[in-house]
Length: 192
Length: 192
Image (cartoon, rainbow over all chains, first blue to last red; front, side, top):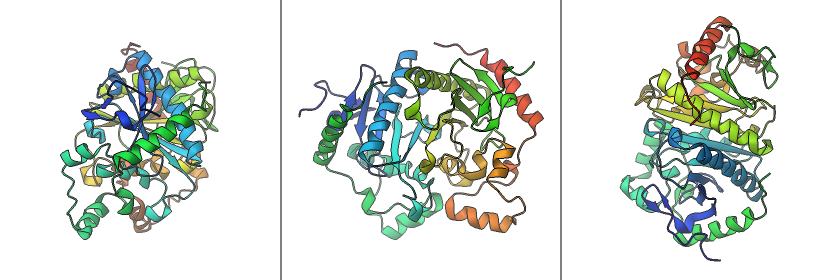
């Protein structure tokens, strides 16, 4: 299977064509470089605007219908029972890429008990866990050579810790493979 | 000004008619008993369903168009620069009332630096801070007579602490006054 779109698709300044698994005329959905839980994906408007308030009526409706449809698929495919759906709408709400994006994160009972409880998910949206691309991560100057203890000290002041292994960036091949798998799964979803 | 609706409006099992400041044929918006920041409001579908996946196409589009419109108003009225928009879609994602509700929380630069940073907001969505009604809070058996140190010890294991004063439940009169003020402000917003 080839990529869904022949035209390049950008998320903010980042080329994400091979990460995209679903496209509508006004929205697209893509897999993450570093999902904070398996199945963590994003849904964005095709038009690059930073704020929800700047979306047109049609873009707003399409975005959320896409969220609903992608959410159903993600919950089914990842064997989840719930979803966190979140938009950091503006830089002062934690937005790191100036392009509207809705996080969809599949959840299961007690899946984050070892990390501080159900709502630990939100802290993980911060910083490198929520990153969308290797480039973005580099731009944000996340120091890979930071010692584990430095990282953990810093993290503990903000949020429950995230396992180091969970934060390993995936290869482009892994992301493309997942995007292709999810694209096939989307075909099973209807629009009702 | 009277309440917006003569018919009672329920959020989950809770009667919230006097807290409602905006109604469409398919959605409504209401103020919070204990906003986690000033201007923290909720937008729900009129029909009581627990999950986003159960919303119809029209309900889904209307819900998010209402979120966009209410968000614009809240950002303007509360002098904010960003918004957190979040749905805990299902109990395993932290949902406490089995009726779809979108949190809209106005944000300003560095408004939560003293509580652990921008994303501290999400932890506050948990438990009593996110409560919608006095009744709900009682049902959840939040112990008001817990000692402060017990509370803080418990809280610290989960999330950045929330100021005690910020968590004082508001009176019904306060909520109704705010709902009426926000209803007037909504009249200034358009649907484009």
